[in-house]
Image (cartoon, rainbow, N blue to C red):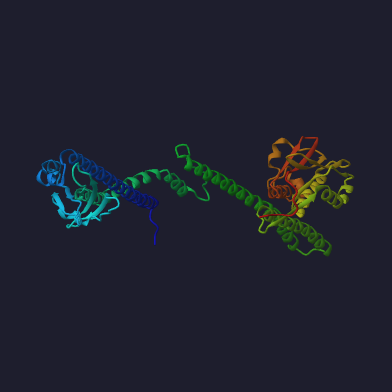
Length: 471
């Protein structure tokens, strides 16, 4: 089943809540009106009973006078069709002395309590209407007390409540229709800014990620979403451009050795040659293939470091110990160039041991390859309150400032031809940056032409809590 439009779903939800609210308010109003009518009926009945009591106390000295001269009492009841007055004597059983009104039999239903003849009773008339009855024992001047029963027919109150319920039921569908229409219109207008997201989404393609959502005129909630979407598009655009550049660089890097291998093989096979020459060509091809193998291996490591497919187990690592291990591995390479290696300082970080060793190895091999023969390469460890650093410094030709921002890009070389002659693939520093990204750190470089060059690994300072799993 196809889901309804969001505006329709929200409109129906608002209509349902409005219906519930109207019903609750109608029920509350009904209860309030009924309660007020009850209070008014009791107050009116008590007031009229008080008037009758006053009249009896002033004008009627005995039960006989009530029967012979009832005009004062009739004057108080006549004109009030909803009142019925009944007066009973004090004999046993009680006899009716006077009855005025249209509901004379209602007095017979009153359950009299001889211990305290005063109170209210809610009774039903012969027609089934609710009747409120008040009764009270009233003393006369020269005779025994009489029982006065005053009944109020509440048929008009019942008709009023019934009319209210009927009008509410009739008006409710129209109210809900009006509320639902207004809610749908307001919600539809409120969702109009989402059209900006739809238009941008329709224009976005893998070749064109330049479109952005204008967040200036959007509500605050959608403005935050627009900024998040724009930020996501910026990252996607940057990643796709980087991927495109990587593909171009990779094709260029692989094309040269492949062309060299094919050219050498074709020239060698063009005519018969002595075995020594075949051997020389095979050795040259083997060197080129070894460089290709290193490049592929580094590319695979770079891919795994950039997007780890399995959780990495982080542990507390002594950087001094790892730096000393790496310098021992490169001691022969340094001796060939009469260079000395020195490690100074100590520090601890939380990370993956093999990755950190790989990062230090790449920086140290780079420093030896491009350092001045007879100079010293130093690895300096330092701990600050907010960061931990490992700096590899070598003396050499230095690097121009224009090259520094791109040194960590894949396949970027300051001197491309010289790097290939020295066996470089252009991926070592890119691997270093990916490793530092995994460790939530960064790699930096400072250099001046003709002076020393320093590559630094900056790790975030965090409590050393032992093993840690990073996903």
